[in-house]
Length: 144
Image (tube, rainbow, N blue to C red; front, side, top):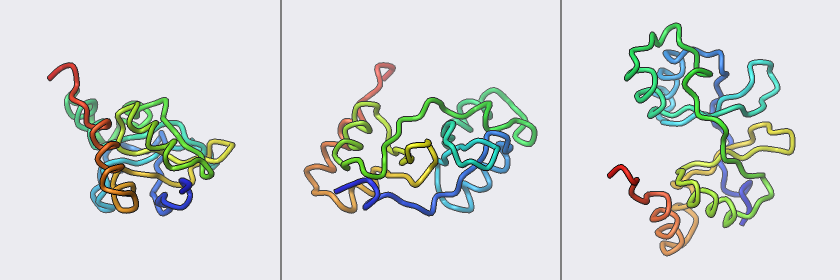
């Protein structure tokens, strides 16, 4: 199975110039905790990702104003990506190695095409494979 067969394509995108307040509201409205961040030039080129955790750990914990703080200031970059024609197993291996629950699917120009999440894997893979990926993604941090 390839990434383009499993990826979610209807993912909202935000730009690095969007406010944290706008992005938090979009996450709430879309019921998601992760959004790809693209250039503000209309190209759709991936520059980072922002998660609800980024908002809490960086913006809230540092008492940044969500109305004036831009996503580019708190986003995570660089981003682990996969290509549309990449085998799902390769994407799963990247997710496990990098301990991430989502991987952004891009084209050869780094334009966002979709996202593959651990949830998507669980919906389509065997319980054994899902368990293997989940176990690797969820390894305990050295801090705990």
